[in-house]
Length: 281
Image 1 (cartoon, rainbow, N blue to C red):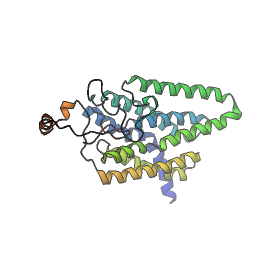
Image 2 (cartoon, one colour):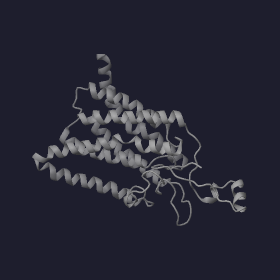
Image 3 (cartoon, one colour):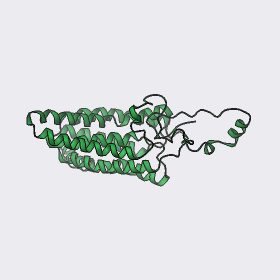
Image 4 (cartoon, one colour):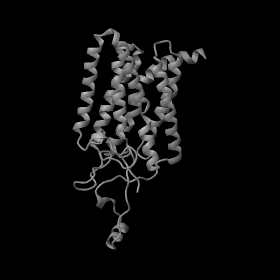
């Protein structure tokens, strides 16, 4: 058992540092190659950007293992690139003046209405403004709180728990999207495999590492691993069932549907899944 812990002690930090690229590189390449972000939840970049920025500002007070800090820095860069690709290749609007193409339109059903349409904006600009404002706010708070030692220790722990708790919810938007659409189409198997494999190695390292690993990492890591395993069960059940991405109405009509319309019938209702960039017929 000692040799396994020693081996993990060397491999786990390296894997953790490279995990942002290993986990999301294939997803980014796939969206860029296919020229669409359909099937990818925009809430994933949101969660990872918020979590990583909070973890970066948690480090000065906690001084946890440096590999976790480097991972957070790389993750910010990876998620910024992923968000840019997703915004550039969003599905086309459904109609003039109507609902924008997913993932930018509010989804029906659970969590469909967010205050101020948060993270469901039609213009890319608010997304970047939010990221910049969040970074600036954390930077100001860090400078101010660090000058008040009695308060800073509590503030640092709070920042850490917020960031790690947010990261632990990462699989939830995709779980809800899959459950609503009964499909995992658009969600890369490579991402799921890297999540589950990373969870196993990460948790083992958290509990066997000789370097400083705060309790918050361990608690949130276990919760996230459970969610990732549930996502794996969904993938086995649903697979990559057929889904239809909302585009221009004329592109969604088959010849049979057009003939039916000419007889006075209406087209089937297309409902979108929460936090998702795709929908089923």
